[in-house]
Amino acid sequence: MKIGYDVIIVGAGAAGNVAACVLSEAGKSVLLIERGKQRNYTEDGHRDHLRNHRLQAYGFNTGPELDGNPRVFVDQQGGRHVVRPHQDNYHVNAAVVGGGTFVYGGLAWRFHPKDFRMASSYGRPKGSSLVDWPISYEDLEPWYGKAEQEIGVSGDSTGDRNSGPRGSNYPMPPVADNATSVHLRAGAQTLGLSTFTPPLLVNTVPRAGRGACMRCGSCVGFPCPSNGKNGTQNTVLLRALATGRCDLLTKTVVERVATDDRGNVIGVDILEAGEGGLLSRRRILSRVVILSAGAIETARLMLLTRTDREPHGLGNNDDQVGRNLQGHYYPTVFGLFDEPVQDSRGPGVTIATTDYNHDNEGVIGGAMLADDFVLLPIILWKSGLPDDLPRYGLKAKHFMRDNFTRIAQIKGPVHEIPNADCRVSLDPDVRDKYGRPVAQLSGTTHPETVRTANHILGKADAWMQAAGAVRTWSKKQTLRLSAGQHQAGTCRMGQDAATSVTDSFGRVWGHDNLFICDASLHPTNGGYNPVLTILALAFRNADHIVGTAF
Image (tube, rainbow, N blue to C red; front, top):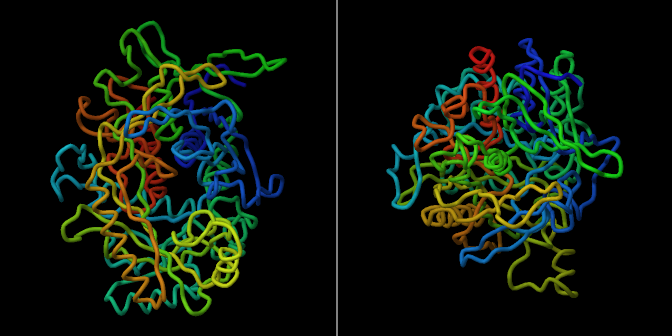
């Protein structure tokens, strides 16, 4: 291991692996640090339907480890609850090389042009922290195209009549229809909705030496048996390692960002397990540090690093680090049909509409709506049965036996309205197994988010009924903390240090060599799955770092 590097990147997930590729291919020496393990399907399998990132009640098929990694959740009445990674209100991200891209479904949406100017489009609701992005769709468009080409997206480049202009087509054709899409397309035509096949980070044809999707029955939440799901661990990370200039350090925790006596960033301090499990600390120096640990852990690491110059955490003299935590409400409608509409073959998502992403009367923003990924029986049993059906006994078993293949879903991620009081802070009492204060999560989204979510729920229900469902059911949306697998916003970028944490390229205000490169940067999180935006920003910002930070 080298004593010093040009760049240290904390977190080998979606953005971190992209940054490692761009920087190492530009000739920089890079150390990429990941707290999780490096896994693959062949060696690790991880097909357990009870323990995965789609159903986490019993554990995971990657990480984080359940013991020694708690968080504290503060409910709306002020009650404090210590939660473990597999429990509700933890808001977990996969801790593994590749991060969420190792187990995601891979919906690869570009944000709508209006998603970048929400405050200008709708005004700023009272009590919200809604703002425009400091960049536009046009600024990010070429980087969207780069991410689609270099990671690998399948889709219909001409299908979305509501999208922004494109400079390139998808490199692979879209996934094929299934029985669900036939019914939903007919229902959409009845309602006058435009539909198309959504973009996926999945090989529909063999590509880059890896196979195409084999349509297995467990996609999202699991690693891919054909290696046809395109994450950063099997694309850009391999390129970074092939340069010989990128070192990957796994199962390693960064205790804090290292600083000198003047508060300048000089590297990171890591924790290593020695003989007998004893921890030792080691400092690794670098010219540049990039934090890519996810919106919760990136903010936590900033808050853990305190100096005389910044006694409340790096970049936090204006109390912005950790604020504006957000994710996605996911209003979901289930529909029961007279005939089978799914065959348990993946990936499952085949039809979408973006007609409700904006210009909905009486609400702010909106959401993309689509059918869902292939549904595991246990997922339906745990979270998708009608409320009037018992969760035990013959009645429930007969419902599953008779109806499982006759149930479809429509769902979509609502463009949330951020709230500055929804935040990550350091808990004063609870420590993790390394002795560090854990993340405390508190606050809720804005009430306008609930209004929009229930509006979208009504649109999804109307579509399901128009498609021929003989019965529909769903859950009304309520005010809550929302920061799950699409967590974002805690270190938002902007143009003013008083109201943001970084500039438009992720450089932390007051530091020339400290950058953030993950969804922490998102001022708002769009009405779409955010991973393509995370990837595009990482390509853009890493390119900027190459040209300006050395």
